[in-house]
Structure formats: structure tokens, C-alpha cells
Length: 341
Ligand code: ACO
Image: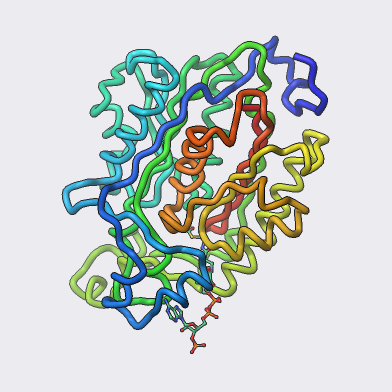
């Protein structure tokens, strides 16, 4: 390995150990909800949704299809690409804000479905930033030699917490899952760095009031629509642009990389205007961006995981390329990762 950039993890003397993504996979449900369908549900228009967000359609899980089901299908595809069997998996991390139920964690349900009997399993909740948080956590176990194979999944059934009478939010979200297998891969730097950040002072910008210890489910809480997500769109937008830009800059700075060195940028797929504003500040070109939000909307923790899989499948990312993922979500939380693919 002769890097023309700095590997920020090298100083920790991991004796040649690196953490690479050796397989990716994704799954989206079959049912498509178009903007034309939404026009029949709330007072909106295809023109408004496309011009304000870039979203044309999104996927909806079936009534009997849950977050763990989508996560399991994405995981199976990632395992196939990595060429591993379930008994090789040491740890499963699922990033989600829509677990099948508050407990047990969704990672345990995936563990049962794929029969990864040796694996430990837990969930990470960092909303739309969850996949980057989970990647960074998983990476720690690989680099420390605690584990050899970690399965990281971002999976969401956002349709289950979407208020389908609220046009401010219901046009934005969709369901799906993406997965990655983390392993040491010789002769690659793999996951070079990951920036993670949070600002709990802005927790009220995007949240779901009901269902936790503060507001358990009651007839009143359900009638008051407390079990659906709520968002201050404009403020969230401004914070997203700022946080994603700063996280991306910090990740590049740590690796001593210029934005022009990044082959592919995979941003959180929330809003086309957010992506364009971040790209402009970074000095990134349209060719560097991977965008699929027109087809899936915002799938929260699944968003960049699905996009990564599609970018690899499309040939936009080749082994050896430098890529960057950059995310933002409720919390507020944000993150960015630079990876030698
Ligand atoms: N159809 C038609 N009109 C609408 C719709 C709709 N679906 N939604 C809102 N409007 C109206 C509003 O009521 C408002 O009307 P008014 O001026 O009469 O009050 C008008 O359109 C403009 O609304 P704005 O909020 O100013 O629209 P904006 O340009 O800010 O776009 C949006 C709204 C798309 C929500 C944007 O603010 C946004 O994308 N915010 C960020 C969301 C995000 O990125 N979330 C990421 C994290 S998600 C997670 O962690 C789960």
C-alpha cells in the first residue's frame, strides 16, 4: 500500500489491519407509490414534490413485511457478494428508527432469520445518520481484532411512522434496506475515516413524540397522532446543508484529500436541493454525485446503504476508487466517511 493521501488510522499501529467493505447488498419493496398517487391522498402536486425535493416515487413495504424482513434480504445480497456464509458473521449491527418492535432489537431478528448463530447483535439509532454510525462502530471491532466479519445494515419501514394526512412530511419518505459486510482486506486502506457528530439542542426539529417512556401509547396519544414523525422542514434543511458540508470537509481534511480526488460522493438522499447545496459548497461536480432519491425518497438509515449498493452495481465505483458518504438526520446527527473502495 502506498497512499497518495493520509490514512488517519495508520498512527494507531494496527499492524497492517484495515477494515474494508467486502460486500454490499440492498432490497426495496415491490410496491411503488408515485407522486400521482400522493395527489389523491393529500393536497399536493407532482410539480411541487419534484421541484422542492427531486422525489418522483418511493417504495412501500407490504403490511406483513417488516424492517427485519427487508434487512434480511439486503444482508443476503451483501453476503453473496462477499462470498461468506452466515456462520462466519461475528456481529450484526442494524441502524434503524423503525425497529420491528421496541425490543428485542431488530439485529436479533435478522440473526434468527439468517441463522448467524455465532453473531452478537444490536441496533444503532442515529436516524438518517445511522448507517455511517454503524459502519464506524463495526470498523472498531475489525481494527481491534475483536471480530473478523461484521454485518452492518441500514433498514427502515418509515411508512409505519409516516402521517399520511400531513403533506409536509408524507411526500418525503420511503421504505428499504441496504447492507455491508466489513472485513480486513489486505492491500486496501478500506474505511479511512468516519466523522460523527450530534447536536441534541436541536432534537425538536425532527422527532416522533409517542411510543417511548415520555409518551407511551394510549388511546389519547394515538388520537393525537403522537406516533408519527414530525419535522420542521425549513430549519432541518438549513442545518442539513451546514452539517453535511462541515462533516465532509472534516473527513477530507483528515485524509489530506482534495474533493477532486473523490470518485463518487454518496450523500443522504433526503432532498435534491440539499444535495446540490452541499455539492456546490464542496466544489463537487454533478458527475461525482450518486443520486437515487427520485426513485426511493428518503429511506433514513437505509438511504446511503442502498445508494452505495446501486453505485457499485452500476459500475460507478471500482475497486481502488476513493468514495465519500455524507449523511444527516434527526438528533440532530451527522456524519461522513471516506473509503478506499
Ligand atoms: N405539497 C404542496 N405544498 C406543500 C407540501 C406538499 N407536499 N408540503 C408543504 N407545502 C407547502 C407548505 O405548506 C408551504 O405553504 P405556505 O407557504 O402556504 O405555508 C409551502 O409549501 C412552502 O413550504 P416550505 O416548508 O417553505 O417548503 P420548503 O421549500 O422548505 O420545502 C421540505 C419543504 C421539502 C420539507 C424541505 O424543507 C426539506 O426537505 N427539509 C429537510 C428534510 C430533511 O432533509 N430531513 C432529513 C432528515 S430525515 C430523518 O432523519 C428521518
